[in-house]
Image (cartoon, rainbow over all chains, first blue to last red; front, side):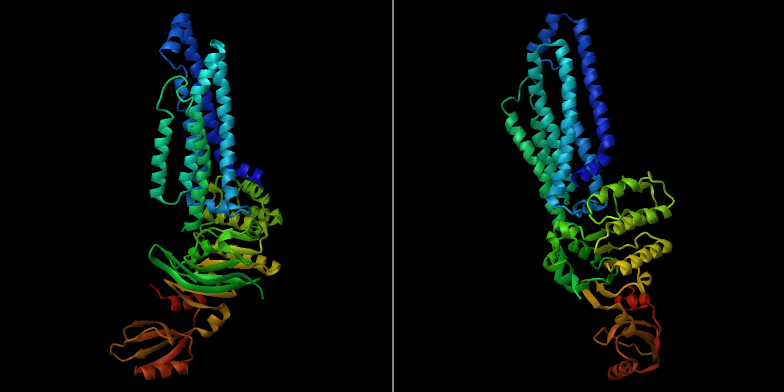
Length: 222
Length: 295
């Protein structure tokens, strides 16, 4: 049954997902080309100065990419479910409602993990071509909050679409916006090293928010 | 006979607006039950409660003996559900949707589905979103037949369908219900198609239930009489005898469960001077309009 749900979710999001992957590859490739150009036209110590002392993030174009992918995957997956209250079809399937809802989130989450891992590997390879391992570690620490923000936006999109009342949707949206903004508050290396475990736990707990929206959908749909 | 659905004192409000109060009915195994009423009388509300998509303000609804708000997966597997407007996963094509649903239902029979699909002039890779309303209704029906459920709940199957597709839909349902002793719960506001199809019915009005009885009894007992009165203004009201009435100038039409002699006595008691009283023939739709009114 889970495989069948996976099949349905994939049919819904596949083009959006692949579009997000292509965009991601394009941005990583652009970072690679820009970095090559900077290194070719500047002396090594000058590049080092920019990156270490002036905190130039050569991968800043990556910053909003995970959030954007999380958002479009969320829209592609959950918008069709609320059109004509199609979610009723899903909830009528012979499984427990909570399992049905969590299956959807789990499938989206796994697909995001795959795409984010794929892009991180690409970004890491680009980094290791030009820089030592320590810079890569710093990059991963800096990029991690952006990745977590991508998951947060995806989880919020799930809860927001399934929520039946606009007032609550707006409330969830405002709280989510404030929370996600924190992930982009500091620009610089390793800014979130201490906060990231807490943010990750909060982000993971948001994956359960769909159950609350699902409960309200089930209790009150007209 | 065992009841597949039991509705007891069901009451629901949207905010402060009463939908209905103390709705009661049972659906017997193997019967075809119609919940009839004009738009906005609470038919879809009842369907939502039956499928666990709405918690009623009061009362209970049991499906195969389980509280409908907490149906187990086993019970859900025994219930086929058609959403108003034949809503299905429109991003799938007819092959994909069959593959998707087949994994959930142990008694899945793909033959009736593909038999129905063969009659549609669509290709296997045509998305449901690119089909006409009539074709979509056949996809939804084919999936219900393939599911081979014990109880079919159909919310306004007639929505958006022309007469041919409505007939086709009911012909398949009738064949299915009669040959395999399935139970069907159907709502509709187009009544003429359901003549000869339903076993029992509940007719709903705004905020109340007008009647609950076997359809054959309703057709047999419910009558329409017309008579003339003199030029005086006649004051008529609905009551135990007169279920509804219409007056155009000096011609009056009343609807009642009583015989003509009782009606004559009733009019005499009310001191209404009438002439040319006669019983008028009615179709099921006439009877429905008679009891619910034209407005």
